[in-house]
Length: 288
Image (cartoon, rainbow, N blue to C red; front, side, top):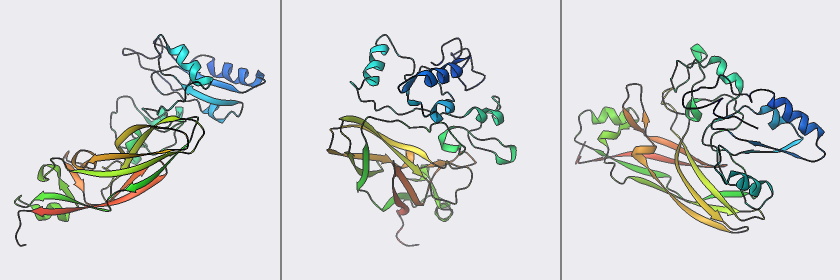
């Protein structure tokens, strides 16, 4: 099931998120008539509200294939019959159809506006219900994460000769342009263990939540790093993640200025979280 370029294309926008035509009815009737499990394969470029299939116990699996090329049929068959172990992650949020009710297509704001019932856009700012979240994906095996090594405190070097430097630090955020960014990276070592019975590839997604107190303007979380690793069944791999502090732990304030919030940043990797405190270290000051 799914969409095609008569429904979505560079020159054509969809008017809804449901499966077009009678597809939903067909899927439900096939699942009801089947004596075995039903697998729903979806082809589309964008998200589809398939909540009905997600809730139907007779539909055992849902595979999103995007728009595959000439070998797509063989690739889908390899996944369905277990020859290949899938490891993909959704590159966008799959919203429910109701999401569109308060989302004028003339409004491009990313941040939500509760006073206008505007829900916001993308996983970074939208907090409402979803069909499937950004970065979601299953495998025929199971992976577990653990933090092997990561700092709890990290110093951010700030140029001490900047004007209004004290105000910058007192406001709990440092301008990126006032920071000695260079190769300022926060290193995290993560152990990925395959606790299932199949070899598989796993994409490690690292999200960051900035400290509280930075208001409505900061995202509630954002992707700051990712790494793909292949792990044999029963074994583990250690993955080193380097997070560029100025690029990925900074936020843009209401005035359009990119700043690094000081304080506790929370890193999330699957079900595991780790807190690291960013602290400004003023350079070039002998006494203050």
